[in-house]
Image (tube, rainbow over all chains, first blue to last red; front, side, top):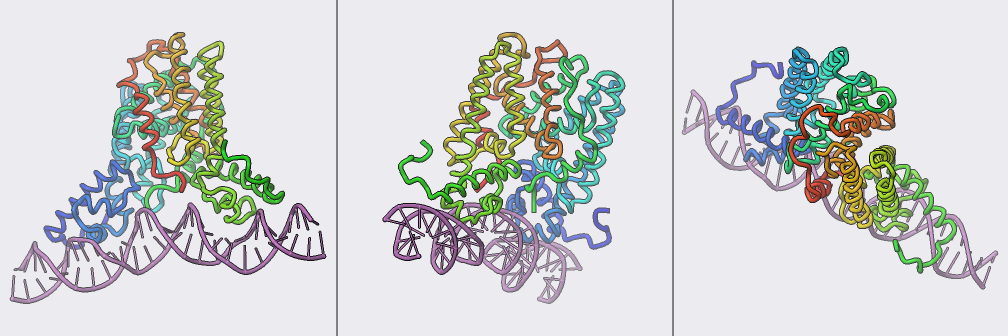
Length: 221
Length: 221
DNA sequence: ACTCAGCGGAGACGACTTCTCCGCTTCTGC
DNA sequence: GCAGAAGCGGAGAAGTCGTCTCCGCTGAGT
């Protein structure tokens, strides 16, 4: 449903270029984030900017084409994790897999963690993430394998925190975030709650959503 | 030594305006970060931009005037924490205090966690932070109150991660970061032998420094 | 061969910042 | 009071950086 299939089959060379653009965009966005310019992408594909703009009306259109299914894959990941035999393993597996993908792709990181109006599909897909993380968390809490004072929104925040670590590791130490995640995971076990309860209350879903949406002047366009 | 004291005492109204600028800058930078424009600051002070530029040659000059001692205060905090009777309490106290200050002041956050050439004093002050955190960490490790596979650079990374949480809380939930810090602190206790060691190796000092310096296109100017 | 989809990429545009300039206002010392 | 230095305001010059358009040319497809 992205675009009606009716139009016209595209000339052979044009289709080839389309693929090149997509491939270049994947690479460029992955390393430089969504802040990369379309000029960058075009040049990386060995094409002129005009060509990119003929194929994709907008920078948003390109981003959407690239990231909607990537994000949907994260949703599937969460869904699968909900079905894991061991709730804790499910949560850990999801956090690791999701973190790994976002850490390896600055563009995905931006698409998931930052806002942007106009990217309808991406936004919708992202919205499906929250409830699943919530379920994942609730399951663990019920099973007593997660400290009871952690909410789903807290886990979302933690994911953000891990990505901050990933940003520090950058491409120089692409696995550096795992250390931060490791510390966090140990801190999430119930027995580990040595001290006091976590202070304050977790963010409500609305607060979290607003925080994520309101975020950053950055991004693209 | 900021500027030689010799010049001339400044007319009374000028001095008053200077104070207004400083006060406005504190406020504006705290809420909008270093990305705020000097026009913002000037307007917030009820003055024209020209006035600000007469007093401070540069945006950097203003930032420097504001944040050098703030960062130095963080250094002092770390120094004091090193002298705490209980090493763990020292570390926790430092992390909490430093996080609190940075969470409450987006400008400070930017000044400490991001780069910027030209801000000599700020950069120097920041450089003194690393070794102290290292000492703080080593003390805890030696005392066996910190998991042995955590290095000073890891703690620095964790601080970053906490600030990511702070950014989410924003001004709506200014204390939200404490929950993330809480989880992290519990995860830092010497392994009540849950899992495995933290994966990979900690960043070296140079790697961390480079990561911090190389960071972000953002900032001011 | 002919023609039209497709291409390239200079540059128009717009959004933003930083910082300057200069006529006018306000102090201050005498 | 008054002269004249110090200070002020804020329009706008100048620069930067992205997005996206335009149009003459190229080469695929029949």
